Length: 223
Image (cartoon, rainbow, N blue to C red):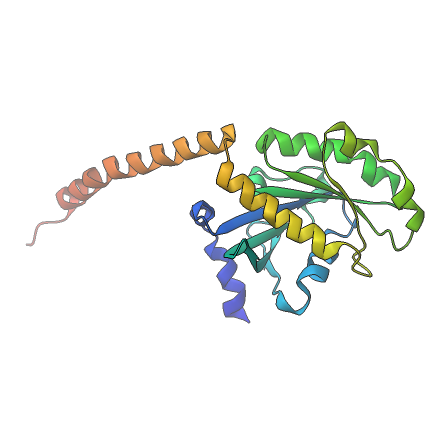
């Protein structure tokens, strides 16, 4: 088990540059059912890994999109949402977002605007799906008009983590949106991050010879 716990610490953001990898994040207040939705979708095929260093939970999944195998990393908040804000690294290189509220708790719906504003600060262009969860407890919720999704032209899914209603469709659609976004991305933040990474690589290359030279100079002479 210790070995399994160590594996997540290999988190390498560069892997999200590979064509066959996508990162999907979940947002929303505590206890709206984000983790339960993921577990319902992944069922017995998932191995949630708690990343204490990053204060999040990572769920790995393999999907097939247009005949191609896609490796999907679902990132869950693991309690960070209690601070009403997520660390910037949570959004880094995300390709899609699933934003969840509880149809039984009006405050979780009202708080969507705050989560959405933060999402767009870090990821201005990625596709976002609004999710009305726990409709099994209030089936009449499916007849209500939720203006938030309409205001921002976002797709709205009525789902239930408890009985599985629309869960598979939600995640499969999110994966397709993430793949499509990655293939056609013109996100300004992606360009900025790419330039920063290239700059860091150039700096490392420039510094490397100097470090080798200094180490030779500082090496003590044999007596």
